[in-house]
Image 1 (cartoon, rainbow, N blue to C red):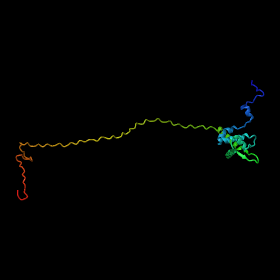
Image 2: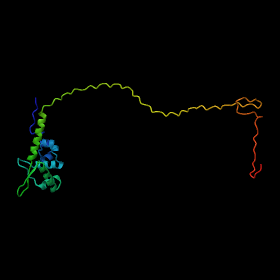
Image 3: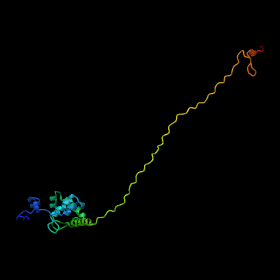
Image 4: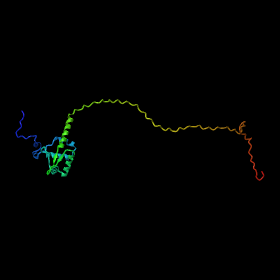
Amino acid sequence: MSKKKKKNAPNEYSFEERSTPLIAQRGFTPISSAFLSYYAQLNITVGEAMLLIHLMSFKWTRDAPFPAISRLAKLMGCSERNIRKLCASLESVGYLKRVGRSGTSNQFDLSGLYAKLEDMINVERASASAPTAVPVLQPQTVPQPLRRQPPQTVPQPLRRQPPQTVSVPMPQPVSVPMPAPDMEPRPGFPWDTPSEQQPATIQLVNNEGGQ
């Protein structure tokens, strides 16, 4: 048997239960989860994203919010000039449009931001519903075993050979037998015996006319 909820029991889904009663007294700002999911893909700075959140906090109906520049500067802790720079940057990418009003603050049209978020949601849904392409298996080539290569012979550097010595035979002296003193001369020899050798005589010639 299901338990019945007690009367006057606090709603666990209320903002007061999800935060604290004191914080709930200051109210809350409904921020789309799409903005929190895609703001990093909008190519905007953190300051520009914070300005958009503050503008959403002033959007109470379908109409565009119209907070004063001075109010936004006080909430963000910066100068009014900085707020105007952030607005101009958001206008350049089409996420914001300032609509002037006479004698009062401008309106901040956020329709460009909402249109961009819807486009991003549709792209995500289309990619999720697209059929998944089945990868085609490519035939794999089986690597052939490496053949054993014959060892390569590395030529050795030529060594310098020492010079070879060539022995040339020297002519041997020929000994000619000399005749002994008491030896008789033999015919054909170019010398005479000592007894036959005549002493050489030297004649002195006197240049004056006498010998």
